Image (tube, rainbow, N blue to C red; front, top):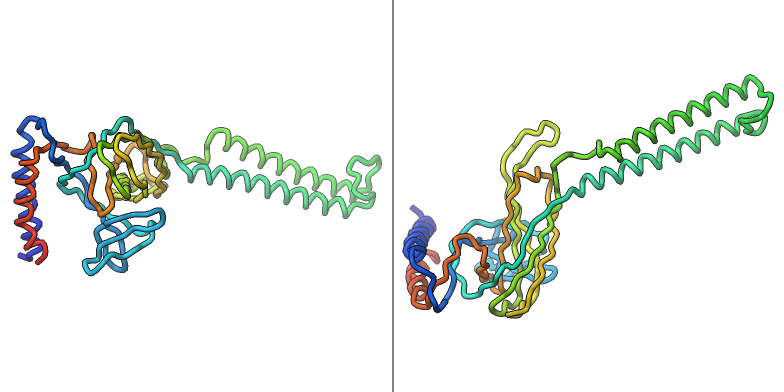
Length: 303
């Protein structure tokens, strides 16, 4: 067995042991920290993913082990659940997710563009036909030659085809026939946080879990997990923080999605939230015990 495997096993056993014992206790009067199930986030740099240790408005900073490297915020981000111990905490006062389809909006825009293009083509074709008439293009003239009458008939056909096309496209717009029902690609995250401590250089990781479905056959092809990083800036204790984010992903069925929101401070330390999974406040003594047991696995981690 590899040392890394031993490390993960040891940490898992440690986490389970400490968490199981602490969760059975009542909330302490004096908080030293918060134990909860959070996430470990990493970003792609080169051919590998490395732990995220900071974010600014344009970049993600990762720890490559030999130093910190700056990568684009568009870099691939991965997350995995992990038991966390945090000293910083924020109350979640209001939080909700909603989703819409930008692809459906694009399809509508393309439909309108097609209507406009077809109308322009029709007008050009009619103008060319009129220019071929002996009477100068007066389709309402009195006595028309046989040739001009044939041209007028062609003009009427073009105009009727255009009218039919415009009507069918307008009906599609009005009824949403072009839309893919129940599929979305844009997630909106809105909420309010009440931090109990300052959080310098704060950033968040939004995670979306959803079914991968073939839009044509509607067959489920698997499950996908997408993470996006956003910079929030310095957070001040006691000052309400409004969260308003938009996350773009590939189309997915809206009812298959679950969402996660994780808050971090500079250095990559996760902040406990009042809605964190399995949240358990700890006394200073319990925190010290956890840190001591956790430190015993660090030599294996470094191996």
